[in-house]
Image (tube, rainbow, N blue to C red; front, side, top):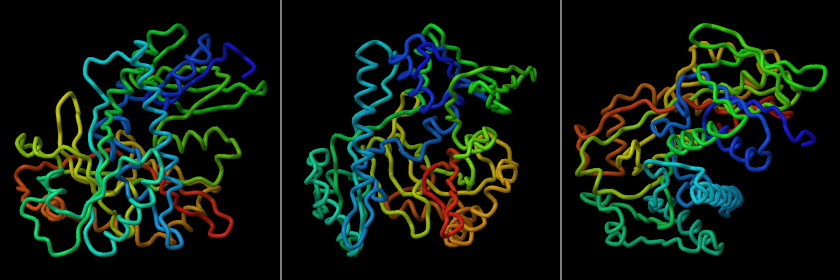
Length: 412
Protein backbone atom coordinates (compact mmCIF):
# COMPACT_ATOMS: atom_id res chain seq x y z
CA UNK A 1 0.00 0.00 0.00
CA UNK A 2 1.74 3.17 -1.21
CA UNK A 3 -0.16 5.61 1.02
CA UNK A 4 0.73 5.13 4.70
CA UNK A 5 -2.27 7.22 5.74
CA UNK A 6 -5.02 5.84 3.49
CA UNK A 7 -8.67 6.66 3.92
CA UNK A 8 -10.60 3.42 4.14
CA UNK A 9 -14.36 2.86 4.27
CA UNK A 10 -15.70 -0.38 5.74
CA UNK A 11 -19.33 -0.96 4.86
CA UNK A 12 -21.21 -2.96 7.49
CA UNK A 13 -20.52 -3.18 11.23
CA UNK A 14 -20.27 -6.98 11.44
CA UNK A 15 -17.52 -9.47 12.21
CA UNK A 16 -15.90 -9.06 8.76
CA UNK A 17 -15.45 -5.28 8.95
CA UNK A 18 -14.48 -5.49 12.63
CA UNK A 19 -11.74 -8.03 11.88
CA UNK A 20 -10.38 -6.11 8.90
CA UNK A 21 -10.50 -2.86 10.86
CA UNK A 22 -8.46 -4.40 13.69
CA UNK A 23 -5.85 -5.75 11.26
CA UNK A 24 -5.56 -2.40 9.46
CA UNK A 25 -5.00 -0.50 12.72
CA UNK A 26 -2.30 -3.00 13.76
CA UNK A 27 -0.45 -2.76 10.45
CA UNK A 28 -1.25 0.86 9.45
CA UNK A 29 -1.87 2.73 12.71
CA UNK A 30 -2.18 6.08 10.91
CA UNK A 31 -4.89 4.93 8.51
CA UNK A 32 -8.23 6.77 8.58
CA UNK A 33 -11.11 4.30 8.88
CA UNK A 34 -14.82 5.00 8.57
CA UNK A 35 -17.26 2.19 9.40
CA UNK A 36 -20.72 2.70 7.92
CA UNK A 37 -23.68 0.69 9.25
CA UNK A 38 -27.28 1.12 8.08
CA UNK A 39 -28.78 -0.09 11.38
CA UNK A 40 -28.51 1.75 14.68
CA UNK A 41 -26.66 -1.18 16.32
CA UNK A 42 -23.40 -3.02 15.76
CA UNK A 43 -23.51 -6.71 14.75
CA UNK A 44 -27.30 -6.76 14.44
CA UNK A 45 -27.52 -8.82 11.25
CA UNK A 46 -25.67 -12.06 10.44
CA UNK A 47 -23.05 -11.55 13.17
CA UNK A 48 -25.66 -11.53 15.95
CA UNK A 49 -25.69 -14.69 18.08
CA UNK A 50 -29.40 -15.36 17.44
CA UNK A 51 -28.92 -15.00 13.68
CA UNK A 52 -26.02 -17.42 13.19
CA UNK A 53 -26.60 -20.92 11.86
CA UNK A 54 -23.31 -22.07 13.40
CA UNK A 55 -20.82 -20.77 15.94
CA UNK A 56 -18.02 -23.35 15.76
CA UNK A 57 -16.86 -23.51 12.14
CA UNK A 58 -13.62 -25.36 12.97
CA UNK A 59 -14.33 -28.44 10.78
CA UNK A 60 -14.32 -30.72 13.84
CA UNK A 61 -17.96 -31.72 13.42
CA UNK A 62 -19.32 -30.22 10.18
CA UNK A 63 -19.77 -33.23 7.91
CA UNK A 64 -20.48 -31.10 4.83
CA UNK A 65 -16.86 -29.89 4.97
CA UNK A 66 -15.62 -33.43 4.25
CA UNK A 67 -17.46 -34.72 1.15
CA UNK A 68 -16.81 -38.05 -0.53
CA UNK A 69 -14.83 -37.59 -3.76
CA UNK A 70 -13.98 -40.57 -5.98
CA UNK A 71 -14.58 -42.98 -3.11
CA UNK A 72 -12.41 -41.08 -0.61
CA UNK A 73 -13.09 -38.44 2.01
CA UNK A 74 -11.88 -35.07 0.69
CA UNK A 75 -10.32 -33.08 3.55
CA UNK A 76 -9.28 -30.07 1.45
CA UNK A 77 -11.98 -27.74 2.75
CA UNK A 78 -11.84 -29.07 6.31
CA UNK A 79 -8.09 -28.52 6.61
CA UNK A 80 -8.33 -25.02 5.21
CA UNK A 81 -11.19 -24.00 7.50
CA UNK A 82 -9.59 -25.58 10.57
CA UNK A 83 -6.37 -23.68 9.90
CA UNK A 84 -8.25 -20.40 9.40
CA UNK A 85 -10.22 -20.92 12.61
CA UNK A 86 -7.04 -21.61 14.62
CA UNK A 87 -5.50 -18.43 13.19
CA UNK A 88 -8.63 -16.52 14.20
CA UNK A 89 -8.35 -17.86 17.75
CA UNK A 90 -4.72 -16.72 17.86
CA UNK A 91 -5.80 -13.23 16.77
CA UNK A 92 -8.53 -13.09 19.43
CA UNK A 93 -6.10 -14.35 22.09
CA UNK A 94 -3.60 -11.65 21.13
CA UNK A 95 -6.27 -8.95 21.32
CA UNK A 96 -7.36 -10.14 24.77
CA UNK A 97 -3.79 -10.39 26.10
CA UNK A 98 -2.95 -6.87 24.90
CA UNK A 99 -6.13 -5.35 26.33
CA UNK A 100 -7.61 -4.54 22.95
CA UNK A 101 -10.66 -6.75 23.43
CA UNK A 102 -12.46 -5.63 26.60
CA UNK A 103 -15.31 -7.99 27.50
CA UNK A 104 -17.70 -7.92 30.45
CA UNK A 105 -18.56 -11.57 29.68
CA UNK A 106 -16.70 -14.31 27.79
CA UNK A 107 -17.59 -14.57 24.11
CA UNK A 108 -15.33 -17.59 23.43
CA UNK A 109 -16.07 -20.71 25.49
CA UNK A 110 -14.69 -24.25 25.48
CA UNK A 111 -17.25 -26.73 24.19
CA UNK A 112 -16.93 -30.25 22.73
CA UNK A 113 -17.75 -30.66 19.03
CA UNK A 114 -19.43 -33.89 17.94
CA UNK A 115 -20.73 -35.57 14.80
CA UNK A 116 -23.56 -38.09 15.25
CA UNK A 117 -24.96 -40.36 12.53
CA UNK A 118 -27.10 -43.47 12.13
CA UNK A 119 -27.57 -45.99 9.31
CA UNK A 120 -24.92 -48.27 7.79
CA UNK A 121 -23.89 -45.89 5.00
CA UNK A 122 -23.54 -42.91 7.32
CA UNK A 123 -21.61 -44.90 9.93
CA UNK A 124 -19.26 -46.15 7.20
CA UNK A 125 -18.75 -42.54 6.06
CA UNK A 126 -18.00 -41.39 9.62
CA UNK A 127 -15.44 -44.18 10.12
CA UNK A 128 -13.69 -43.23 6.87
CA UNK A 129 -13.82 -39.56 7.83
CA UNK A 130 -12.33 -40.25 11.25
CA UNK A 131 -9.52 -42.42 9.84
CA UNK A 132 -8.63 -39.75 7.30
CA UNK A 133 -8.69 -36.86 9.78
CA UNK A 134 -6.70 -38.26 12.73
CA UNK A 135 -3.57 -38.49 10.59
CA UNK A 136 -3.37 -34.69 10.74
CA UNK A 137 -2.11 -33.01 13.95
CA UNK A 138 -5.00 -30.55 14.06
CA UNK A 139 -7.50 -33.43 14.24
CA UNK A 140 -5.35 -35.97 16.12
CA UNK A 141 -7.34 -35.64 19.37
CA UNK A 142 -10.57 -36.75 17.71
CA UNK A 143 -12.32 -39.71 19.38
CA UNK A 144 -14.55 -42.16 17.52
CA UNK A 145 -17.10 -44.48 19.10
CA UNK A 146 -19.94 -46.76 18.09
CA UNK A 147 -20.37 -47.84 21.72
CA UNK A 148 -23.72 -46.33 22.61
CA UNK A 149 -22.97 -46.44 26.34
CA UNK A 150 -19.94 -44.24 25.73
CA UNK A 151 -21.92 -41.90 23.47
CA UNK A 152 -24.63 -41.75 26.18
CA UNK A 153 -21.96 -40.55 28.61
CA UNK A 154 -21.05 -37.79 26.16
CA UNK A 155 -24.61 -36.67 25.31
CA UNK A 156 -27.19 -38.30 27.63
CA UNK A 157 -29.97 -36.07 26.33
CA UNK A 158 -29.64 -37.58 22.86
CA UNK A 159 -29.44 -41.21 23.96
CA UNK A 160 -32.18 -41.48 26.61
CA UNK A 161 -35.17 -43.31 25.15
CA UNK A 162 -33.41 -44.00 21.84
CA UNK A 163 -34.29 -47.28 20.12
CA UNK A 164 -31.13 -48.85 18.71
CA UNK A 165 -32.67 -50.10 15.47
CA UNK A 166 -29.82 -49.01 13.24
CA UNK A 167 -26.03 -48.75 13.57
CA UNK A 168 -25.00 -45.47 15.19
CA UNK A 169 -21.66 -43.75 15.70
CA UNK A 170 -20.19 -40.46 16.86
CA UNK A 171 -16.94 -38.53 16.89
CA UNK A 172 -15.91 -36.02 19.55
CA UNK A 173 -13.36 -33.23 19.80
CA UNK A 174 -12.95 -31.83 23.30
CA UNK A 175 -10.98 -28.78 22.13
CA UNK A 176 -13.95 -27.24 20.30
CA UNK A 177 -15.28 -23.79 21.10
CA UNK A 178 -18.49 -21.80 21.04
CA UNK A 179 -18.01 -18.27 19.74
CA UNK A 180 -20.54 -15.50 20.23
CA UNK A 181 -19.69 -13.51 17.13
CA UNK A 182 -22.12 -10.76 18.11
CA UNK A 183 -20.36 -10.00 21.41
CA UNK A 184 -16.97 -10.47 19.78
CA UNK A 185 -17.84 -7.96 17.05
CA UNK A 186 -19.19 -5.42 19.50
CA UNK A 187 -16.01 -5.64 21.58
CA UNK A 188 -13.78 -5.26 18.52
CA UNK A 189 -15.68 -2.27 17.16
CA UNK A 190 -15.78 -0.68 20.62
CA UNK A 191 -11.99 -0.91 20.68
CA UNK A 192 -11.76 0.55 17.16
CA UNK A 193 -13.99 3.46 18.18
CA UNK A 194 -11.38 4.43 20.81
CA UNK A 195 -8.56 4.51 18.25
CA UNK A 196 -7.36 7.69 16.58
CA UNK A 197 -8.75 8.37 13.09
CA UNK A 198 -11.57 5.84 13.37
CA UNK A 199 -15.23 6.82 12.98
CA UNK A 200 -18.11 4.41 13.54
CA UNK A 201 -21.20 5.86 11.85
CA UNK A 202 -24.42 4.01 12.66
CA UNK A 203 -27.70 4.59 10.88
CA UNK A 204 -25.92 5.33 7.58
CA UNK A 205 -27.00 3.52 4.42
CA UNK A 206 -24.65 3.45 1.44
CA UNK A 207 -26.64 4.30 -1.68
CA UNK A 208 -23.95 4.45 -4.35
CA UNK A 209 -20.26 3.89 -5.03
CA UNK A 210 -18.45 5.83 -7.76
CA UNK A 211 -14.87 5.39 -8.97
CA UNK A 212 -13.25 8.81 -9.41
CA UNK A 213 -10.79 9.66 -12.23
CA UNK A 214 -7.90 9.72 -9.72
CA UNK A 215 -8.68 6.15 -8.59
CA UNK A 216 -10.35 7.09 -5.34
CA UNK A 217 -13.94 6.18 -4.46
CA UNK A 218 -16.87 8.46 -3.70
CA UNK A 219 -19.25 6.84 -1.25
CA UNK A 220 -22.77 8.27 -1.18
CA UNK A 221 -24.23 7.63 2.28
CA UNK A 222 -27.62 8.67 3.66
CA UNK A 223 -28.57 9.08 7.31
CA UNK A 224 -31.56 6.83 8.03
CA UNK A 225 -33.14 9.24 10.55
CA UNK A 226 -33.08 12.58 8.74
CA UNK A 227 -32.17 11.49 5.17
CA UNK A 228 -29.13 13.78 5.23
CA UNK A 229 -26.71 12.78 2.48
CA UNK A 230 -22.93 12.68 2.82
CA UNK A 231 -20.20 12.14 0.23
CA UNK A 232 -17.14 10.36 1.60
CA UNK A 233 -13.92 10.05 -0.38
CA UNK A 234 -11.92 6.87 0.20
CA UNK A 235 -8.77 5.29 -1.17
CA UNK A 236 -10.13 1.81 -0.45
CA UNK A 237 -13.53 0.27 0.24
CA UNK A 238 -14.41 -3.02 1.87
CA UNK A 239 -17.97 -4.30 1.48
CA UNK A 240 -18.84 -6.40 4.50
CA UNK A 241 -22.59 -5.93 4.31
CA UNK A 242 -23.80 -9.53 4.37
CA UNK A 243 -26.52 -10.12 1.78
CA UNK A 244 -26.51 -6.38 1.05
CA UNK A 245 -23.01 -6.70 -0.40
CA UNK A 246 -24.36 -8.05 -3.68
CA UNK A 247 -26.20 -4.82 -4.54
CA UNK A 248 -23.24 -2.67 -3.52
CA UNK A 249 -20.87 -4.78 -5.59
CA UNK A 250 -23.10 -4.16 -8.59
CA UNK A 251 -23.13 -0.40 -7.90
CA UNK A 252 -19.33 -0.34 -7.82
CA UNK A 253 -19.35 -1.38 -11.52
CA UNK A 254 -16.04 -3.20 -11.20
CA UNK A 255 -15.68 -5.92 -13.85
CA UNK A 256 -15.24 -8.64 -11.20
CA UNK A 257 -18.77 -7.95 -9.95
CA UNK A 258 -20.45 -8.87 -13.21
CA UNK A 259 -22.33 -12.14 -13.55
CA UNK A 260 -23.06 -12.53 -9.84
CA UNK A 261 -26.54 -13.08 -8.49
CA UNK A 262 -28.00 -14.22 -5.20
CA UNK A 263 -30.68 -16.55 -3.88
CA UNK A 264 -31.89 -15.63 -0.38
CA UNK A 265 -32.49 -18.32 2.25
CA UNK A 266 -33.81 -17.57 5.72
CA UNK A 267 -33.38 -19.73 8.80
CA UNK A 268 -35.36 -20.70 11.88
CA UNK A 269 -34.49 -22.54 15.09
CA UNK A 270 -36.25 -24.33 17.89
CA UNK A 271 -34.97 -22.85 21.17
CA UNK A 272 -35.32 -24.68 24.48
CA UNK A 273 -37.02 -22.82 27.33
CA UNK A 274 -36.50 -25.52 29.99
CA UNK A 275 -33.40 -24.89 32.15
CA UNK A 276 -33.19 -28.54 33.27
CA UNK A 277 -33.04 -29.72 29.65
CA UNK A 278 -30.53 -27.02 28.69
CA UNK A 279 -28.17 -28.06 31.49
CA UNK A 280 -28.24 -31.75 30.47
CA UNK A 281 -26.58 -31.11 27.10
CA UNK A 282 -23.10 -29.70 26.66
CA UNK A 283 -21.86 -30.04 23.10
CA UNK A 284 -22.31 -28.94 19.52
CA UNK A 285 -23.65 -32.07 17.82
CA UNK A 286 -23.91 -32.00 14.02
CA UNK A 287 -25.64 -34.53 11.78
CA UNK A 288 -25.95 -34.88 8.01
CA UNK A 289 -27.93 -32.47 5.88
CA UNK A 290 -30.96 -33.66 3.95
CA UNK A 291 -30.40 -34.34 0.24
CA UNK A 292 -30.85 -31.13 -1.76
CA UNK A 293 -30.61 -28.83 1.26
CA UNK A 294 -28.15 -25.94 1.54
CA UNK A 295 -25.17 -26.39 3.90
CA UNK A 296 -26.57 -23.78 6.30
CA UNK A 297 -29.36 -26.30 6.99
CA UNK A 298 -27.09 -28.99 8.46
CA UNK A 299 -29.02 -30.09 11.58
CA UNK A 300 -27.38 -29.59 14.96
CA UNK A 301 -28.33 -29.76 18.62
CA UNK A 302 -26.28 -26.86 19.77
CA UNK A 303 -25.22 -25.52 23.18
CA UNK A 304 -24.45 -21.80 23.00
CA UNK A 305 -23.79 -18.90 25.34
CA UNK A 306 -25.95 -15.94 24.34
CA UNK A 307 -26.36 -12.74 26.36
CA UNK A 308 -24.21 -14.31 29.06
CA UNK A 309 -26.60 -17.23 29.44
CA UNK A 310 -26.41 -20.88 28.40
CA UNK A 311 -28.88 -21.78 25.64
CA UNK A 312 -29.86 -24.85 23.62
CA UNK A 313 -30.93 -24.62 19.97
CA UNK A 314 -31.93 -27.14 17.34
CA UNK A 315 -32.06 -26.51 13.63
CA UNK A 316 -31.74 -24.60 11.51
CA UNK A 317 -34.86 -25.03 9.41
CA UNK A 318 -34.70 -23.34 6.03
CA UNK A 319 -37.22 -20.78 4.94
CA UNK A 320 -37.62 -18.36 2.09
CA UNK A 321 -37.84 -14.61 1.93
CA UNK A 322 -37.02 -12.21 -0.90
CA UNK A 323 -35.04 -10.08 1.57
CA UNK A 324 -31.25 -10.06 1.37
CA UNK A 325 -30.99 -8.91 4.99
CA UNK A 326 -33.16 -9.66 8.01
CA UNK A 327 -33.87 -5.93 8.26
CA UNK A 328 -33.96 -5.57 4.48
CA UNK A 329 -36.66 -5.04 1.89
CA UNK A 330 -38.91 -7.64 0.26
CA UNK A 331 -37.85 -6.05 -3.05
CA UNK A 332 -34.16 -6.97 -2.56
CA UNK A 333 -34.22 -10.07 -4.76
CA UNK A 334 -36.14 -8.41 -7.60
CA UNK A 335 -34.00 -5.26 -7.57
CA UNK A 336 -30.83 -7.38 -7.74
CA UNK A 337 -31.74 -8.78 -11.17
CA UNK A 338 -29.70 -7.05 -13.90
CA UNK A 339 -28.88 -7.86 -17.51
CA UNK A 340 -25.47 -9.24 -16.51
CA UNK A 341 -26.85 -11.76 -14.02
CA UNK A 342 -30.33 -12.72 -15.25
CA UNK A 343 -29.06 -15.65 -17.32
CA UNK A 344 -26.79 -17.07 -14.56
CA UNK A 345 -29.71 -16.81 -12.10
CA UNK A 346 -32.18 -18.53 -14.45
CA UNK A 347 -29.65 -21.24 -15.33
CA UNK A 348 -28.84 -21.90 -11.68
CA UNK A 349 -32.54 -22.08 -10.89
CA UNK A 350 -33.17 -24.76 -13.52
CA UNK A 351 -30.22 -26.81 -12.22
CA UNK A 352 -31.35 -26.62 -8.59
CA UNK A 353 -34.99 -27.67 -8.72
CA UNK A 354 -34.46 -30.09 -5.77
CA UNK A 355 -33.34 -27.14 -3.65
CA UNK A 356 -36.50 -25.23 -4.57
CA UNK A 357 -38.63 -28.25 -3.64
CA UNK A 358 -36.74 -28.60 -0.37
CA UNK A 359 -37.35 -24.93 0.52
CA UNK A 360 -41.05 -25.21 -0.32
CA UNK A 361 -41.36 -28.23 1.98
CA UNK A 362 -39.51 -26.41 4.74
CA UNK A 363 -41.67 -23.31 4.46
CA UNK A 364 -44.83 -25.43 4.64
CA UNK A 365 -43.76 -27.14 7.87
CA UNK A 366 -45.64 -26.48 11.11
CA UNK A 367 -44.01 -26.39 14.53
CA UNK A 368 -45.21 -29.97 15.00
CA UNK A 369 -43.43 -31.02 11.79
CA UNK A 370 -40.21 -29.41 12.98
CA UNK A 371 -40.59 -31.04 16.37
CA UNK A 372 -40.75 -34.46 14.70
CA UNK A 373 -37.29 -33.82 13.25
CA UNK A 374 -35.99 -32.79 16.68
CA UNK A 375 -37.10 -36.18 18.06
CA UNK A 376 -34.54 -37.91 15.83
CA UNK A 377 -31.83 -36.10 17.83
CA UNK A 378 -33.57 -35.84 21.22
CA UNK A 379 -36.06 -38.74 21.49
CA UNK A 380 -37.66 -37.67 24.80
CA UNK A 381 -38.19 -34.02 23.86
CA UNK A 382 -41.38 -32.25 25.00
CA UNK A 383 -42.83 -29.85 22.44
CA UNK A 384 -43.79 -27.44 25.22
CA UNK A 385 -40.10 -26.98 26.08
CA UNK A 386 -39.32 -25.47 22.68
CA UNK A 387 -40.08 -22.13 21.03
CA UNK A 388 -39.67 -21.23 17.37
CA UNK A 389 -37.47 -18.24 16.47
CA UNK A 390 -36.52 -16.65 13.17
CA UNK A 391 -32.76 -16.58 12.68
CA UNK A 392 -30.73 -14.64 10.14
CA UNK A 393 -30.98 -14.16 6.40
CA UNK A 394 -28.38 -15.59 4.02
CA UNK A 395 -27.81 -15.12 0.30
CA UNK A 396 -26.50 -18.14 -1.61
CA UNK A 397 -24.10 -16.95 -4.31
CA UNK A 398 -24.94 -17.53 -7.97
CA UNK A 399 -21.92 -17.25 -10.24
CA UNK A 400 -21.68 -17.05 -14.02
CA UNK A 401 -20.41 -20.29 -15.53
CA UNK A 402 -19.16 -20.75 -19.10
CA UNK A 403 -20.45 -24.31 -19.36
CA UNK A 404 -23.69 -24.21 -17.36
CA UNK A 405 -24.66 -20.56 -17.70
CA UNK A 406 -24.74 -20.15 -13.94
CA UNK A 407 -24.11 -22.23 -10.85
CA UNK A 408 -25.23 -21.96 -7.27
CA UNK A 409 -22.25 -21.76 -4.92
CA UNK A 410 -23.10 -22.90 -1.42
CA UNK A 411 -21.34 -19.98 0.19
CA UNK A 412 -22.99 -16.89 1.65
